[in-house]
Length: 573
Image (tube, rainbow, N blue to C red; front, side, top):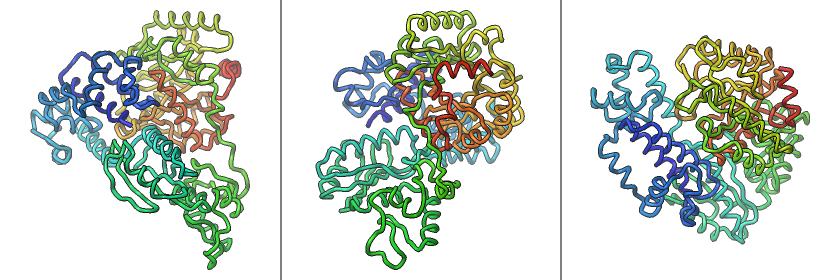
């Protein structure tokens, strides 16, 4: 449960080093190590106890020793020494989108700004516009960044919350008194970020369960302990509530506490029309709330209301109740339907695994194919691959495929879209690839018209098969760039270009509403983990969650196709 804490520590070291204008490769090493630890399914404490830190890709001797020191003492001398050279306020200012290391240091040195409120005041008074590298547009972006930080404050990424909740649920499920246990809330609905974790259980005795819960090793602070509800703050700052409910109302409680609020209100309205009332204790006849008619399972409640079961991801009051009343809720895609990942990076660019290692990991996941798409040549910061190296990569993949008939690697590249909409490689090279992803990595502050035009022009290239992370957002860090998604979807339909659901935890890009819109327009979508380490293959489940929230079925995703079917679709394109 200290994975996030250790990862954050390494990210902070990278930030401090960037302020010191340290070697960029060293900075990147800390960032990669942080990404790896964030994605680990195992607890970093357990790995450290077994002295197996060096077995983790990207964790060298120096970083391993720092992790050991922090976990054993709760401190790290190295970061304390770095902080002595840099005011703490500069780090706080750096956390604002639009404020990189250089800008944060200039603001501190020139204006002695030591907090975000001071920064906001200075921006509103236009004190920054005259500083080198600043201007009115920069001030506008900084204000947006401050608001973004406010909105995301206290929220954690879905992936982080899932790991935390599953660990707590697993611990409680081992207790002999516990008969049923599950997490609920927006986490169960698969929202992109989570504020609190809600857990429900049934138990023969509640006190031993509550005693265990508030004394879990990952509890940082105990807020309250009662017979049926207890609350704690976990390491990382997330509040977690546990409720013990009666077995006969577990389904009703799970339905109620999963939400959403809007879905629950719509259900209550429907129940009232049918002569019932519904709450966390069950479904009752109006004015007869002594004996529930349903509540043991969620399905019992829906069935009694004349509804088809509604998957948690759809419970947002976006028409799901009306469709469930007609029995037409679609069979949503599941992770078991996935045959391959469409977006993985290797050592050819900024990934940390070889072609062979990636293929072996994909086979362990039960997949039938994998698409390895490294960054293109102009993205130097991410190890963009020169033309000659791309050809070498293609040949290596061909040799692998010749030897391995039961698993297919697709040679691919994530090709940058230039400002004029042209691509970072010529068609002569693109036609040698199995699958081409086009993406924007620069010019995020351009106008909506410009960004939309760049992506649209890229889709006109017959070798482009998919647009990656189409809005460019980073949850809690960077707002989406200005892009007209309606026009992008129209162009995608016209050119038969797929749109990516990027499953990287900080992206989860495409929005679920656009997934649904794409489905209705007949546009294919594809899930890509954007994995840079083998552990990050586990992000694919997040992409499936986004797809489910977007009402997608198996037939709507490229990932569910057999490799020959996928290649045939590409050939038609």
